[in-house]
Amino acid sequence: MRLLAIIKEPANIVRYLAGVGEVTEVPRRSPDRGPPHWKSRVLRLQALGNEEESSGSQGYGGDEAA
Image (cartoon, rainbow, N blue to C red; front, top):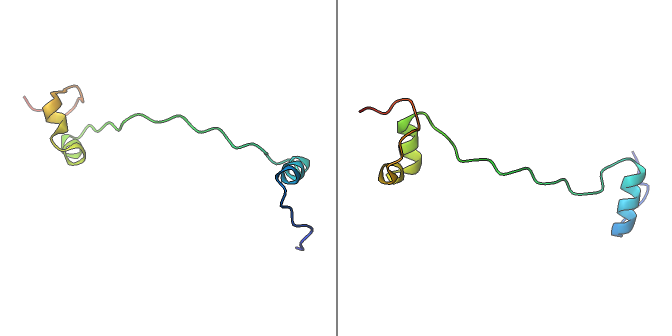
């Protein structure tokens, strides 16, 4: 391997990358993911604390005892 050139100008960098078949644009950002869903009430309470109980939300499914 040997050094061929030092390229500093952005226009020259883009031209070189295009010439060797590399992508010259920044990839788009992936979409945000939704909040986590835990079936385990224990894990939810550890992560959210008493937030879940104060909001009164049921419907996480699974292990809620009546």
